[in-house]
Length: 355
Image 1 (cartoon, rainbow, N blue to C red):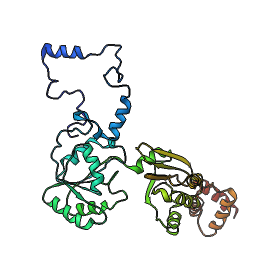
Image 2: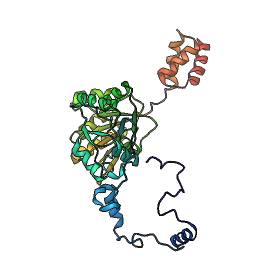
Image 3: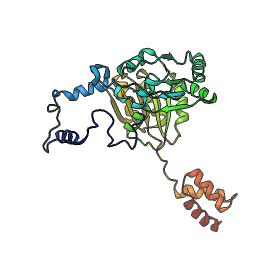
Image 4: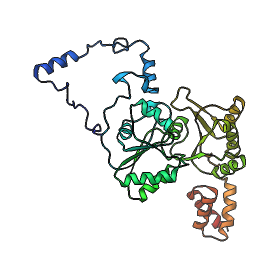
């Protein structure tokens, strides 16, 4: 929230906290806990199942009555004109950020994929923004409408049904048009299914590529996977339950038995991450049937090829030295056979002396 960042620790705001003299000291002394204080749910006056109640509140804030529910918020501050790209929860409503709530509460208008889906989130937090629709079927008309609102000095927020907008949806066209028209674009980060699955997979995260959905038809899907097989990075896919087993089998044929993970229903009650090789995952889902829910498949990078033998390196260098200098032959061997330049150069010197 604005004003709640670094530097705010230890400061008391206005209101009943600002006491003076003896009254303040008495209030502080009365508030001090004893050395043996026990802050269980029972001692705080909550029932023994309070932990489950907290989980319920995080999953559906609107269930909590009165001012104590998560959705009870003060009015949002006015916003600077521009387009705000706002990430929303992928399942658990408690994953909304405080900044996102301020944006959704303070924007002149909020554009959504599906108003029925958006209302569940907005109602949970008591937000009543002016809504508009932005999706692949009305994109061109909606963009004109949004640009006109920005021209009038309004603040416009964009959300998707779940997660970060522009990931596997047409929102990038709106951002591009907004930037080209000279208006500001503000990213409001938050939940993302692809990042949640990636960090839960246990696979390398230093280099990854988000692929999104593969083509639904088998031939096109296999061709796409063939093009991806040599990419030296962890690959992240979205997939639908009915196609999962078939897609995993095609991945296994294209990539080999790479370590992988299938994550589904992330942040929800039936969240599951299954880790195994691609062929075993394909066999599991082929046997047990299509799983329900939103699915992310994470595939590890290609295995490092074995280093070339001395015999294959020497054969390559002997041929290369007929046409190239020692340095050039070593560089070519290092690139072609994926050996170190120092190893290739030292062998090239020895071989050159014997030619």
